[in-house]
Image (cartoon, rainbow, N blue to C red; front, side, top):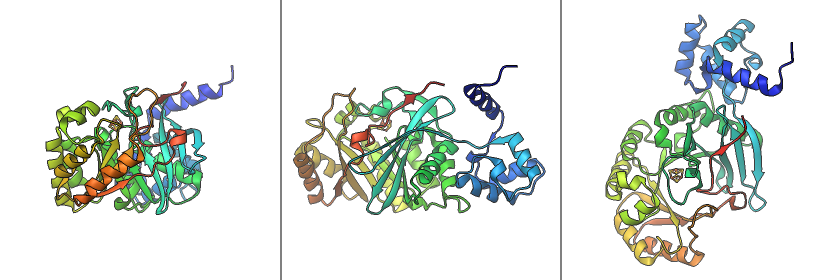
Length: 360
Ligand code: SF4
């Protein structure tokens, strides 16, 4: 009989995994139920969860479980693992961009950033994105896949192991619209917050949306402590609809009303992301218009000099324009920062992450 090649083995194990339970996507309570269903003690759930959060991908390495339990688990469940295909390190600032292969053959990108306040990881929630924002590389190939909770979590685990340091903050701002994959996002937040696992404070996590209003309401109720960021990028419906098709469904007036309610209900400050695009949304009158719309809201504006994407026609505003824009907002009492862009030399900055397809 011919020997199985590595690629064939890989394909076979993926086929087999599809028949089994995705144990790493399960919160501890569900994991306990799975154990009960196979006649095992529920308290083992926290032990298994802890191993997986430390980056153990093989039941055989879970040495505090009996051999019998390890074998049973191998029969009914698999542990999700992303394949790290490539790491690019910025020569300018040490930012790292990771290319991970998913089981589907698609690939996603994640970014590790070092700030003065600690290490941060920007993760993807979908492979590609169907929101079609005109300035964003993630939208170019459309949407290929929703990431499972485990696929979101494993980006943080794998990067933590690679850099060998604690990850202090997570932002869900890579490829994909997190609220378009809402249920898996919520499970991911439950997993990363569990004290048996990474035990990350919900206040250290930020989720960024292009403005799906119905989910903003749900999110405020489900995870009031998680920070919310809104990709705004325009001071009015005309400009925002040109840049972001979602604005035609959820116009700016309704979006900002939902944001005001979210801030009032949760007591949390909302961040508005605003990419400055030369000649399109960066004039003093645009700043005035924006300031007027955000008046008296518990919020913060993050101005981002637009990052270049080769397929897109837009150019970034200059530093002086950004400073003038910020000054107008601040003059109206709106807290504003101009983001220091990290990782631009490796296309790892905001709006530059994209869907990749690798050979299966
Ligand atoms: S900006 Fe966000 S929502 Fe818009 S296409 Fe890019 S990833 Fe999707």
